[in-house]
Length: 448
Image (cartoon, rainbow, N blue to C red; front, top):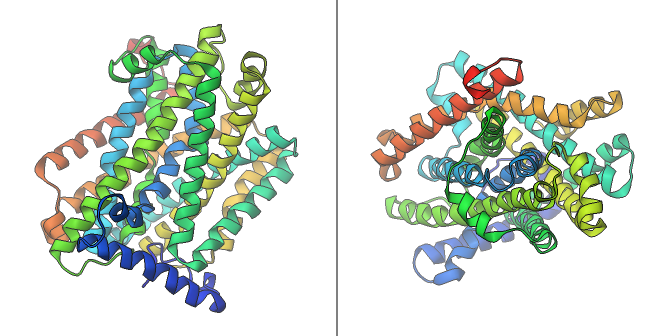
């Protein structure tokens, strides 16, 4: 049984093969027991938990820290509805991606290579690789910054240590897909625990949190652009590509009935994992609202400022927890970014490189940026612009394939799903183009 990533065979050490097979088979057997009804309730769902939690890490990466902190500090609780909206979009798209892998046994990049013209597939691969590297740059830089601020390690050394840590985590793949899934899920839980602590320390106004999570509000032009930034930092192209690779061979359905049951479990997992990530994003923003906006610190626009401002307001414990969550976020999302890069390359061009080679290649831009002393926050902004340019590509491809009955069979999109996903694609594309225009210096009169 192959794992959903199809990572290079060079990662599988001969001595680890029996353990890998045992680990994989146990999970697959538990999934099949759930499909046949031998496992009930929470025990039936447990073996399916994993792929969506890996994908969910992309939704709580350092880019989310930056946009949520800035939104909360400047506008208080009033932008929380944007986080909720972005997360609902993410749930829809990630569920479609996971369904694509289950229905076809292939991931999104593979289907693009098979069904699109060669020149188009190679073009998509090129821009997707750039997006994957831009993603990894932001995530890797976030982990490096967290390590620098938390432990006082110089940025250059912190980048090297971060690279080694992420590589060691990636090596868990040699033991099958389950240990890596558990490890990444544990990181998500730890980030959530950090923000549970921040909730107790910051004392947010929960009445305001509840109200502004469901009532839309937009004020001046800056609030509109921050709303665009929150959505742009939430829905990630590499996560859409990756999720189909995580489910394509994890449990191979033997008939249409098993496909339907697998998809039901998959939908539950997406709701749990992405819902959990959404709560973390909400907590990031209401922590910033309670700690900064409520105390008159309305101009906290980057991670370094947030850390320095938290210390006198909520104390060193709160600032330390904030940096720990940033470090966990950066490391885990960098691991996921490397995994996505592997799926993108293998799918679009059928070419494999060892994970350590990809890890080194994706480390180099961060090493260069740190060595040159480039501002980390500005680098994060540039990376988000690159992602905004690429994001429509996987969304459009995903909609195209999941609405095809000949590919999806019993799991083909219902009409309302296709319509809703097209609406999401339109909104995301329009807002991202708006963000790019504004970032490049364009002026929109209606936004002030």
